[in-house]
Image (cartoon, rainbow, N blue to C red; front, side, top):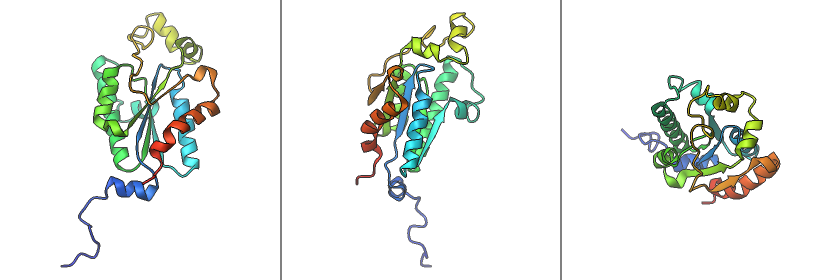
Length: 199
């Protein structure tokens, strides 16, 4: 019997989805200390992209820890598993043609390498939010830094656990001395060429 629809038995490719959406799917991964401005920058970027015809999805601690990873704690093993799952979700979103915007502390090179290896280095755009720790602490409305300094939170990045400066970031932004608009301009100058469909 002749098929009515050609290729009905083949999954729609990533390239076809990207062409339909008019974009190149990538993972834009914001890393930095708690309070550095990762989610704020991710949200500003998502809004700009949406207003200019791009389709994206933000992943951050709020929508990940309350859902797919709500069974994980904060042990070393659980933190690694948290990041591994996020990377796998990001890869699925990229394969669906979406731009995935992630905002996670992801404090070590080893952790970020796990993500890069799962997603693939060509699809992984790392943005380091390099805001100094004293500024991050001044923004800490949840009092996490204060609790960490008092010993109430164990292995808190920047206080009792290290943050390793990324060696492969495509961009570094310090939000302490720039407006959101300035940060957005810097991001777009670097990122638009990576996600625009120029094929």
